[in-house]
Length: 235
Image (tube, rainbow, N blue to C red; front, side, top):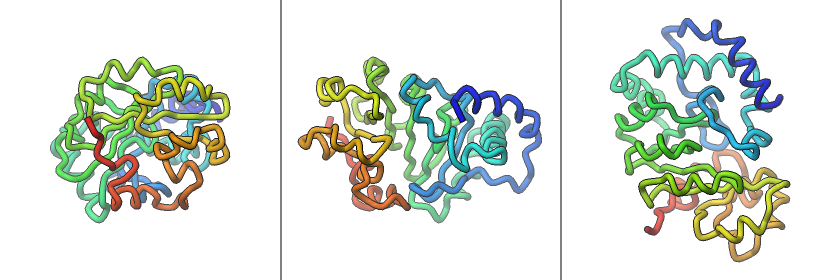
């Protein structure tokens, strides 16, 4: 499914998501993190690189029930005050080591309020620097970029926000190398692309996406080791 088709499906399912059941679960199963909060793609501002590699456009996350759930999650945050929403999220993640936001989709003004109301380790990926800047600095904040969106780094107002560079089969290795000092993490869309990353920069790779570690619950390993996304950035 293409990104544009996914957006069309979200639009066609919007009425199905209007009524949020009382026992509705916000969290979704995520093989890499355990659980995550998945937002609809209508919250995104994707680049061409992001669109062609969007994992929310393939696999179970693109099924009708998953799309409707993401729309209901967004509706829940839109219609619930931040304090109550934060309590609900914290309750669902009570047995998890951290809260992973945006397994799909991106930040909104409302989810930023909720994140800033939660007292628990949190992990946020976003392609919207203006909103990421508003997230409290006790949260792991990561700006997703690629060779077309390097200029977004200049919009960050906090040097402790990390950058994650998406690299796919059409990416130019020279652009990556030329900007390596601005990049904290490299995420490959396929493990075999590791051959395109110079050896001296492979310490920046997400080990899971590079095929250097099993996929299942890989983020938990980085959390425990305080490595990868969870390593403290030197500023």
